Image (cartoon, rainbow, N blue to C red; front, side):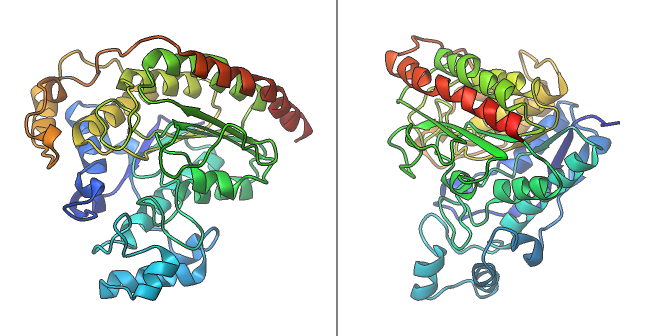
Length: 381
């Protein structure tokens, strides 16, 4: 019988950074773990230390020469211009830093462990906030992602006999690495809700793969009411049609209003409602992290994800220990110089409801007929 939800983490994230000027200079996974522990929501039975994926395990998706180049760059802490050009490492987005192989390999180890535990039936819900590196390519780094842990987890699940899998990506950026990896895989349906006109400039509404790709680009100022409409009119009907054996959710926090790398306007409650609705329709569920570049908003959002997965009621005001975790954060951006008080004292944002704009309704209407095709896939499998 499956046990309670499991959270996978590792202390490597406590001391590792992409560099002082990088958006991932901020602590994320370590803060989430400290916060849920301060809230009394995480005991040792519900926590597992992530292993590090081996090069052989990474080969299931990634190119051997690329893996070797990343290992070599970590040791030497430099790359040639040719290596940077070929593999996308040593760039502004994917810099050289001390744990540049070990850290992403640990994220992949968590996702592979999660896949194995889901396949074994020992856990039905697993949360790995370090995961969600959905831009990684087989032979190069992209978009802060050196490896692609969602792709590795999905492949492990398919190799283990999963016949129908639904991948839902709520990050502000399109999941190009995952979508391209499974565009011809009928056992996997990929749904991405992302900001239009935002890097990596992929994920057009018309992109269908073999009929298994559902892309919903949304305009700037995307609000809570619009997310709720997408959940009700697309995500839940698609989940019902696919009848997945496993659902993988990339729960990036960069669609929140305070995030510096998008122009969307969600509250964290909108993402929590989406996750809760998806979880109810997932026989087995893997929840990953992803984007999120404001240390307070990502910590509060991802801690709330753990509450959602465990059915825990969130406090209106944080207890002193949890508040201390948030007050201990700093951020070099201008918004971090005078953070609002509620970033320290609460988890939930104020609602950001609004009009469901016609362009979103029109895009939903274009995707709705394709949900029936997804049901046909499920019947065939």
